[in-house]
Length: 217
Image (tube, rainbow, N blue to C red):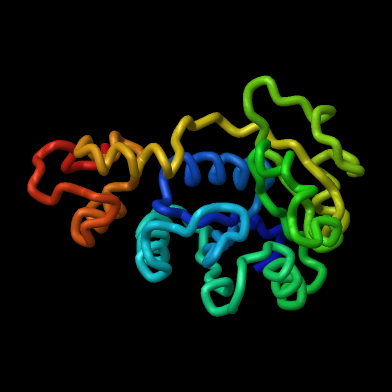
């Protein structure tokens, strides 16, 4: 396969349509034939996931079945220690040579880039694609970076920051877990296969005896 590769990391606890729909939009807009969903094992800047590594991987696999070109990258599950993005980027660069790598970030994650482990190396290894939110301005981010046009992704393998407006999907994994724990079901925030898996595994405090929210949609 040729062309730029999208990279989207997260704990996916659980994977939801906020992830899937925004990344699908970015992949379409930037003509990314392949997107790797990098499953974080032990994120260094947030609380530990609720679901186990194997459960989160299985949910991700179920969710990506309907998205051609979306694939799981679980290399972080096999590495000891915290899941630092720069280590995964180094490994991916060694595999993919001079193909463009595009790290897809939300505006909040991008704004906190300076706090990442070896953050300066991230742009040496990949482009960054920022998905802005309402009211966000690139000038508000205090980083020594340059914004570029989308064509820059084709010209070189890394180093540019590109803003790609994706539809805002107001869903968070935290809110999904809260809904499920309250017995309200996922409220259309999850693929059906993922919701069925959550019920089968008894995740997030799901009430397996409740008749409310039996379907994701």
